[in-house]
Length: 298
Image: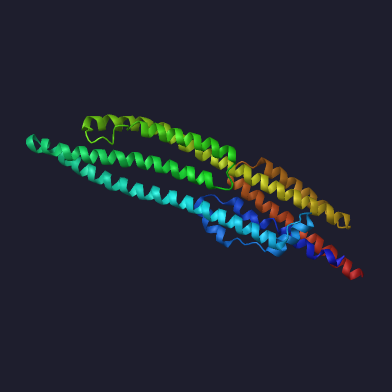
C-alpha cells in the first residue's frame, strides 16, 4: 500500500502548466514564463503512468523545440511592440512640430503667411503620415500578438487577421496620394478628414478584436482545466480501486467542473483554477492518510 504514496505527486504534474492559463496580459505572460520549469523525469513518469510512452529524453527534446518556438513567437511580438512604440514617438514629435508651425501660420499675415504655407504643407504631410503609421502599427502589433499567442485558437486568429488586414487597407486607402511630392495642403486636409471618418470604425474593430481574444483565451483555459479534471478523475478511480474513500473529492471535483463550464471571465477562470488546486490538495491528503493508516495496520 505504501508503494502508491509516491504516485500522489503525479496528481500535481498538470499544475506545472496551469500557471500560464491565468495570465491576463502579454506583459504578465512574459514575466511569468521564465519562472516555469518542468522536471522531465517526473513528467516522463507521469506520462508512463497515464499510458504515454514518451521517455525523459524524448520529453526534453520536445520541450527544447517548444522553447525555441516560444522564443521565436516572443521575438516577433516584441518586434511588433517596439515598432509601434517607435512609430508612436515619431508621431508625437511630428505632432509637436506641426502644431508649432500651424500656430505661427495662423497668427501670420500677408507675405509672412504666404511664405509659411510651404512649411505648413510639409509638416502637415509628415504629421498625417505618422498618424496613419501609428494606427497601422498598432493593428500590426495586435495581429502579431494574436498570431503568436499559444492560447488563441486558429479560428480566432484567422478571423482577426482578416479584420485587421481589411482595416489597414481602408486606412491606407484614405491617403493614397500622400506620397506625391505635389500634394497640396487642401489635399492633405481632405485625406485627414477621410482618416478621421475611419476612426470610429477603427476603434470598434480594435474593441471587437480584443473581445474575441479574451473569449478565445478563456475557452482555452476552460479546455485545459477540464482536461486536468479528467486526469484527476482517473486518479480518483485508481485510488478508489485500491480502497481509498474519495467520495468527497469526487463530489468536490464535479462542482469545480461545473464552475469551469460556467466561467466567462478571467476572474472566474482564476477562481476555478484555485478550486482545482483545492481538489488536488484534498485528494493528495486523503491518499496519504489512507497509506499511513495501512502502514500502521501492517
